[in-house]
Length: 258
Image (cartoon, rainbow, N blue to C red; front, side):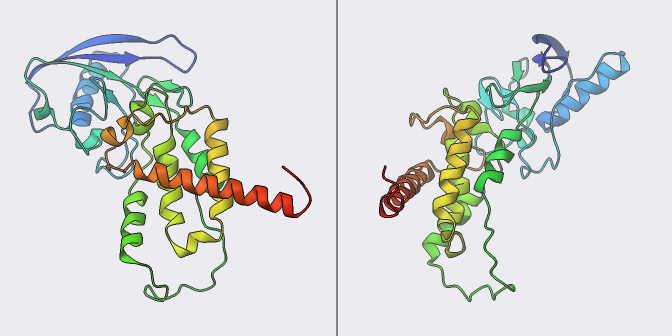
């Protein structure tokens, strides 16, 4: 298969970037998208040109670092897959493929197709954890959890933090990511103790970092490689409003007023 690639090249965070066109021939249809980029980089190195910088790690759809915006879709035209799981058979011979980094202010470009997603780490550090000392490790079935709650929690915990939801959203909102992190802990007994502080801290940090607001277009869910449901956003909103009301009641009862 033969392809024309239009790839965003940017030397560093401060440099002005541009699209550069490359031609690739005789690419196997079974080749993954990242393997195709490896082939391109081998050719560039042999010619003495600088290879295209892109992020990758596990190449098994687990780590979420292979964050590429391909032909207008985060992770490409296939559904429920990361870029490393996208294969060239999803394209047609002779296609022109446009490859860009995530476009969001909180994810500044580091070089070429690599963006800094430290903003997600900061949101998790703000509250996406459980710090209650529960002593030794209890038996798995010592705390009874309804299966429906456990299933919903595991579905939310499947989020890999790749940032596709932000890239897909016209507002660059991180609501789906934050909601997934809030939901998978809020649904379990172990996460209840810090639920109020957690949701307020994470939403506050999300806003502070410059992510946009959710306007319920559903693009985040449609492009999520792990198919995280936007029902988690509704759950997070309920958790957040409940926490805010609870905080106000505490201030009133202690004489602090609104």
